[in-house]
Image (cartoon, rainbow, N blue to C red; front, side, top):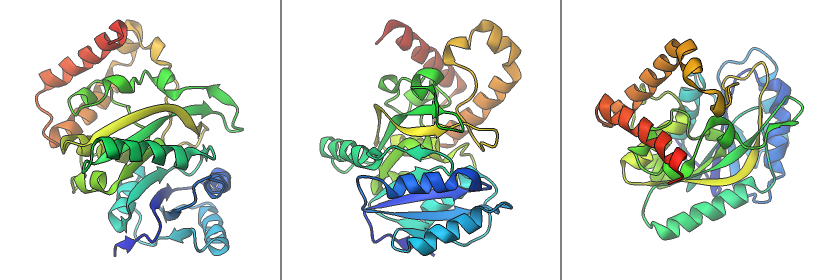
Length: 286
């Protein structure tokens, strides 16, 4: 069953054993300066008190929160994409269970997306922002996830460019329009993550993916993260690091290329060329 959202933005939250920080995240949504949104949540089979927390919030805010009940999807990627398949709205956002959104996140993201829609009418558009990496108590560890991870959005604008970096866009920082959703290819069995899948499908269909350097999410890192920012700073990824972590990096690139290839990216040579090109552009500043 597809749910037609009566509000402007459908915020999609996939949960799994996230009770510890879930309330803080939902509270940060309820405190947003822009309130024309509705939160849809699907739990992937939690064994802690996540469901109880969700039910309490849904009972207290029935006009803002809907819990969707269907079988577990077996992981964050397919859980988020299953929510996307089941909802219809003008705009969409992905929401992790353990972060905190700054109060103006939705409003500022929407302002930028509308600006991009005016510049590129009729196009699928995704906008995404920087994040602050924080610890369990929300103390800032890295003020910019982009700098920590070596993400330079100015060099990641086309489908080809996105071969340059395997971790370019973080889902909880995204806002995208209905055209971008319609660009998504299903089935999505080659998708490594929901966020990059939406971006790649949008670019493949001639859409726009735009990074905005305001860090509007407190991206919490803790011992139970399903996914995370990675513990290694981009500046530490030197020759020695690559040799020591060769197998891990090879597998990561193999999965990422398989996803790109499923969307018609091209040869491995093209993939390697764009990775080298990305590094050169960063070094040269153009």
